[in-house]
Image 1 (tube, rainbow, N blue to C red):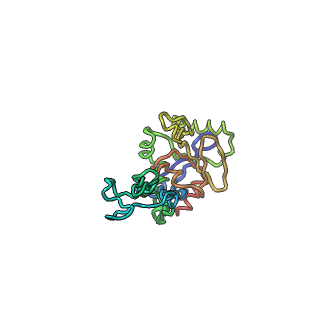
Image 2 (image 1 turned 120 degrees about the vertical axis):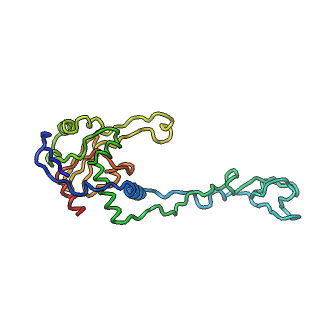
Image 3 (image 1 turned 90 degrees about the vertical axis):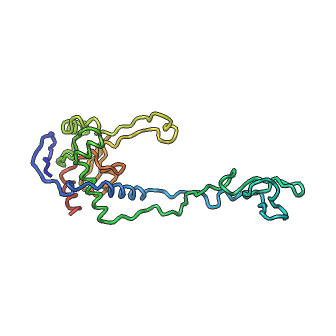
Length: 261
C-alpha cells in the first residue's frame, strides 16, 4: 500500500510504501481477545470481606434433631440456620442468619479477591492483533463501519508539523482531513438519562490518534498523542473494534516497520 507524505503546508509530497503490517487480514476475534487481556492488566482485585455475613453476635444455632433441646421439629418453621435473639423456657425467638436468603446473610457466589483475572497471550497472537489494529486505521471498510460514513485516516505527515502552533496545526488537519475534522477532535457531553446519577455523567468520544516517534514530542488539546513504544491495542482499536481515525509521522512509520520486521 502506497501513501504520500504531507508537508507543513498540507501539500502531498513524495510517495512511500506503508509497511506490510498495514495490509494484513483483520482478525477481529484475536483483536478482541488481546484487548480484553490488556484491559485486565489495570484491573484491581475486588471481592467480599472474608467471613462477611457470618459475624453475628448472637450465639446458638438450632438443631434438626427430634426430641432435643433447641430443635426446630414440630415448630412449623423452615430448616435454615437461625440465631437466638431471646427465649422463654423452651420457646426461642429465632431469626434466620448466615445463608444468603436471610437478612444480613452472606452473598451467594460473591466475587473473590484472590481470583486470577490476568490472561496470557501468545506472542504470535499479540502480533496478529497489533497488525489487525494497524490495518484497521487505513481499511475503509472498518472505518466506515465504525463511523457510519467515509472518513479520511492513515495520513502520514513530516515531523516538522509537530513544531507548529496549535492553531496552525488544527488548520493543517482541517485542510487535510476535510469533513472528517468535525469528528476528529475529542468531545465531551452530558449523558441523557439516569446514567448521570450512576457514575457515568459524561460521554466522551475517542477523537483523533496521532502516532509519533520515540524521540518526538507533541501535546495538543483535543487530540490523543502516543509514541510508538507506548502504542497499545486499546489506542488503535477502542473497545477492541478495528477502525480509528489515525495519523502518523514519517519517523513513526519507520519505527513501526522496524518493530514488526
